[in-house]
Length: 247
Image (cartoon, rainbow, N blue to C red):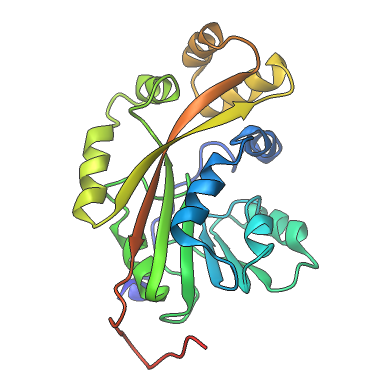
């Protein structure tokens, strides 16, 4: 059982752990047209349902889920971000933030309708423990939704591969296919207040060499970034552990 692992491995985030204020500006710049939210709602609406956001960071996405969900639980392994997230959602009914890794969710079996992870943990081979935990906490018919950056989509994917030559986007696609996910490409618009903000955000994502390359390629203060929206549903009628009522 995943929960029996005494010391789950936590990979430090290279951006938000070190520059949370800059990452906040990045979050606000991302998906200004709402393309990712539209794709997610079309495949796994959460109105009136129980949502878990794995790797929630400082809670940026919790407020959107809380607008219509019955309950929202953010899971984050980095204590300073947990505190920021708790301050962000203070006073929102039905919203909680808990300190935990993706490999050991502090939740009962079959207690969630949607488990969501956005550029937080799941990057292909190696994330099997997190996938197993998500499956454990989902109710029959519930959905695991993973939103990844698309490493094969230019220009952002080119910059990712330039800094991480061993990154294998086709291998990631094969991994998620083998694990039963349906994946869809979505292009989202990132728009910044000015070139200085753009450069600042790129600076927490890429090496100085790649930042210089990216700034030469971007005209103005906006760009399109490719994502993969990955969906897998837990089969209805598959029951594990004690009986559970969805009422």
